[in-house]
Image 1: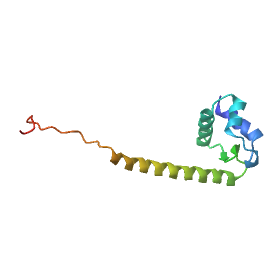
Image 2: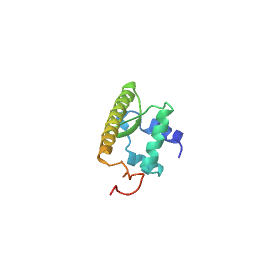
Image 3: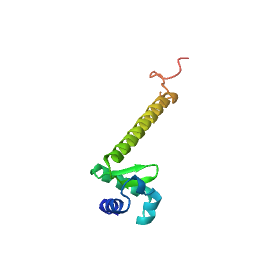
Image 4: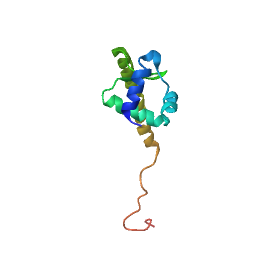
Length: 110
């Protein structure tokens, strides 16, 4: 499936937040998995196509406010991911990464 087909479908049938399509709906419509829908949406957004989303699903934005709300949501997700990375980085301290060192001269000094 290509990005243009998805963009055209969203623009024709899911224009504006009130017409959002769930990922599941799009999966059934196009016969693809959710991960592919997410990749296509991400590609369209990177290309500057105003694909917005909210708790109800994906839609082709009909107003700047819909794009701004999607940007705010994505920004919030970035902050959450960054916080998770910081926490995981701190968790590395719990692992003993030091190697056991043996004396170079051999033996245990007895």
